[in-house]
Image (cartoon, rainbow, N blue to C red):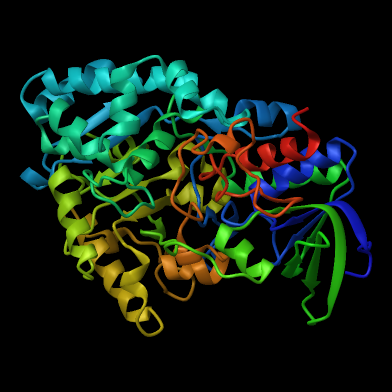
Length: 522
């Protein structure tokens, strides 16, 4: 850290993608910017890494799809980022018949989608309800998504902008379960809809605090369409493009430098290097790309309110080939190209939630997978591609941090993984283990991350991938109206990470909003 100066216009704490976005915008505006990252690499959760020694595959180790990143950020920063739309939205083996049929949602083949809904539900009514729902959320998305990168509106102003009272009630006022019960008769279809409300969110469909609604909202408005796209080259390609933009603009990006304290009175940070040496750096503004509870810790104060809690299991795998399905009407290459839902009927989701709430790992954990390499094989080396190797990303629901609190978490992690793999096997025509690739030493190419692991590795409190419960995309207090949703109670200290209002997901929105707050909205 010898080359670091003693003062900067802005110091950014944390080198995740949002911190890099803020650094790029501020440096392009002529500010002298220093970004400090505790780990040895930039990107936070948006990284690509070789997960298995001797195996040439760079996996998106944590986050893996992109929906909320505005095109404006890509264009304004000149990012060399390519996002590819998945033709298949999802495939869901029907557990009520042992996976011998399934629900296919193919954006490129309406006839196949209609036939699949008819085969699973018996008629066209569920498809009509499905299409009506997503037509309505699409209209909301086109109006609400652009506002995420603007100063906050009041609740009333956003309601007037939406201009659809039924949509407003469904998304913002009544538990999502009310809409599901009213609109859908089929348990499988209702469950597929509900999954978007439960990503990293421990909630039931009928919870009155509406945290499931907030999660659902952010999952259906991304890009104004709700589509979730594949980053070519993996998440690391997004981080690399952002780091290049920040450096090209003149920002200093330093890794292996942990901020251990923030002096809110003097607007300065104390940073420690790998050798334990500490120094104080003054800043006109401090932007914190970390959770609000981490900000409190750095300020030397106690957080109030409930501690954040994540609720997911992330598993990365390499397969020698895709597994066979019990449904002969769908090829594995089609089923795994989109989101592959496993044991996610509405009833199964509720049962898993109740088991986890009672302190037990769900008997049949709901989860979803997708194969990145079908859409983007560039993350695999030439030999792996020639051999037909495929990636598999698995995201398990209703795995709250509390389940992994005892001991060192190893026994609970092993139990959760075993239960999740049994759940996946229950809808396949062969055990997943039969197609699991082995590394040169014979070890399976499989790794698992619990919420506790995310807290240890990424400082996400409770393993919460959103840093705290997601917030509504409008001002909830009068004094928030017209702000950027990044301001804190400490002057010149801003949040620029997922814990800011309108944070969460790989979006860059909190980073841009924090930069706009510093620059006066230019």
